[in-house]
Image 1 (cartoon, helix red, strand yellow):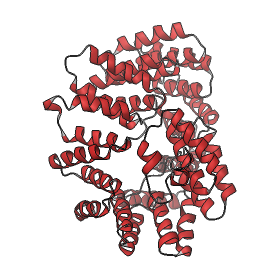
Image 2: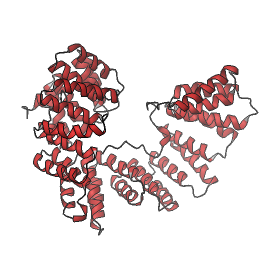
Image 3: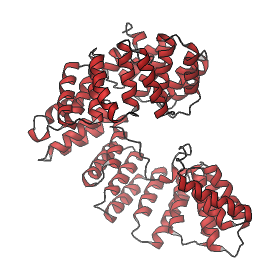
Image 4: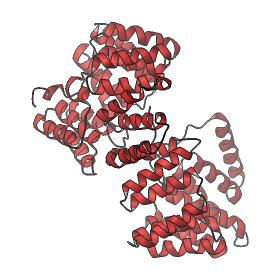
Length: 510
């Protein structure tokens, strides 16, 4: 299961680097309509505002900024309501562009015209929090309470400001008020968890995320919060679930939760233990449980157990995830023909499945079916041109098997020019540069990424980069650091043979 990272409550501060959405034909037609109107009247401030809002919704923030700036310039002073809308949108755009000072100036313009705008006071408070102006943020959130006495947003905002000012006792009181304002909402407990994380109290954060999980109709938000916390402090998450298990008669959902979070945060021994206990309960013998246990078994190099659980999961549910899992385990067993047979069935239903195409290509290489492997990698690249993995595997195939160095260099150049955010993308980009003769550039990319509090998984990917780019001493250092932080995927550390993306060059260096 792959889950996107969910940002904390201040969703105003989404990263400005988010990719623009695909523009559908209807939206293109709307934009053409705006363009025609503005050709006829370039100073039509209402159309400029509408097009700016459209660009904003498409994450095209530079275009949105240009239009809203022109709209404000052409809007008459008497059009107070329009100007409020324009400055409010300008603030939103500047937030996305990380121009927080300009965002504050824009929202202040709105509040000059409408000092009792609850939404804009909230926006201002969040901007001030980002600017570390805790006292100003506290005043803004307090003003919200004047408008709505039991405002949960105000309580959370003031609590955040108190955390910045190290007034933790007051922050605790405000968090209690926020909880009492809406005690049955899952979002309430997610936000409480976020604030407790800011305060450094991960045990309370985990307990609140777990409460949110129990209350939520859609569990994605609290689950992702538990996973994010578990990546840096698994102990707090594990202890919160264990406490809940000690007080609950229904063990099944909590054991399943612990098993899956353990898998997703790389704590495979804990996952194995939880899921094994879970399968002792007859009603828990579901395909998702067998699949999760197969994943932990594979990571722990318990290949025979992994196969048995994957087979059972596939018997119960012939879905794409279970078929891909079975194929991955077959490859790990050294049975590429079995992997190809499973993936052929999967690809007959879903020909554009990139993970399946890459896995099948690797299995076909194991069988000596190199042209078939190349064809599948070509299809994977067409299916998702922004995914660096099939490009890296295709470059390896061309360079080491098919002796087509020109194509290998071209693929690596494509990866080297891709925008990436975090590992493993950083490792792919750096390795592409290093293998194309720009090792100093590759080293610099990885070193910069490692300067920002790397996780155990980041360190593993850094080890792969150094192993494959020839710095074996540094690779061993990164591998050992990953282990010291709890990286326990023994299969990746000792057995994985994925093309150019493994630790085989240092397998002999214990």
